[in-house]
Image 1: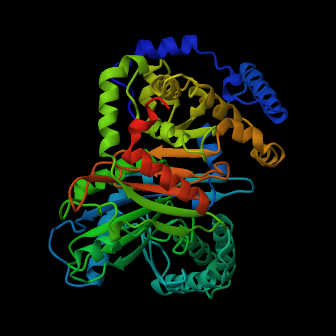
Image 2 (image 1 turned 60 degrees about the horizontal axis):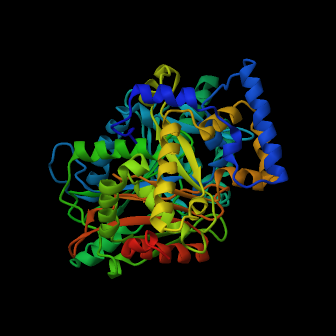
Image 3 (image 1 turned 30 degrees about the vertical axis):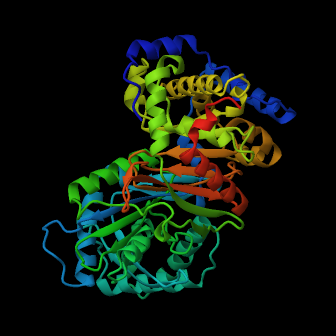
Length: 553
């Protein structure tokens, strides 16, 4: 997200001079646990004043603690890309797969922001840089077990092990993977590596050097980006093909077996000349907006086989999709809505009330306000992730070289602004406050940004004590419901953390063309069945009758 056009370097410096991060602003409801948490934050502030400094990025450390499982990953979809660099059509599926992997591997090598894997330690996940960009091609059975795997090694770093020994390692990898239970993802991957490594060391290899190289090859298998292929149905019914290409891959079944950043699902069209990519990302090393920009670059560079049209809301191809997650009782849903009226109302608000809102009416703010009108989310504190770039530090008068691109968070309780006599007055007051919090967070001078920075100074064990000893205090700060918007994403599948017990919503583009005319957007919801049903009803009202949220009750 970019700063608003009327934001200048002087604005950033002025904000930093005027804003003293009063940690009390993080709390809008008080309890004993909240007071204890506030005292702890104040002690960390004192330590910072005395010279203590965080050793790593606050968001990255927090993500490594709270975003560990499969449900914490997000997924992005891009459709109708042309997968071959020379433009010549493929003759069969095997050729299509080979040519795709070759081009995809080349693309990964040119993008350093994708050269990450996960490293599991006792209390958290760390990100680690990779020297090699390898691809693990996985053939999954319907139950999620592996039928076969093949490695496409980075040609810059070919393995020193003979091919027959590599195949032995891959066969061991498949057998052990299929015998392990489907437990928590990081723990399962570590167990897989430990068992296979022990067996690799007992292989009939000549010398200690060959054994160590075999272990290194196993690490490369674990750290590789996983790619699996599935053809779209060879039918003449366009509605059936559209429904199949819009079906979200079940990442709870077809999981990355190792620690690699990407889990890519590639659907090849029957004509073998176009493909749909669904890529699941681990949230610890990377964030949504940065990855969407990379995916948009891929589509622009590779080209499109034709314009993508969403199914018309209400049609069979647009039926609500429900998938179970690895966590019992938690589901992901995907639905399509028309947002034409919402976007038109936003234009009118920006035309008539921009000065009163001190900035534009944001899509995120409008949706949060509408959702807070629902009985299920009334009086709920809500979370909104914000992309923070190094260049924004320079605008705030800070040295940009000290910072990396990261996420920060905005927390707000919309119902606190529903005390006005008129709904419009309450909304304008809410959007004005929301815009202010967005600006301060992008300039790295909000209370939430400092809180993440302070918490990065402590050992991860504290988070576990706090999570179980004072969970309400954490939830009072970060909220129990989350929403994210990637306005250029065709499809954005929602992640969720342990703290957002009321669920998480993710929105991509809201103006995708529909087959039947008009435009629509895709919404992903993560929550319980009851929460999903309530949010679907609330979104129906937001898309069809947003005016009711701005009128007198």
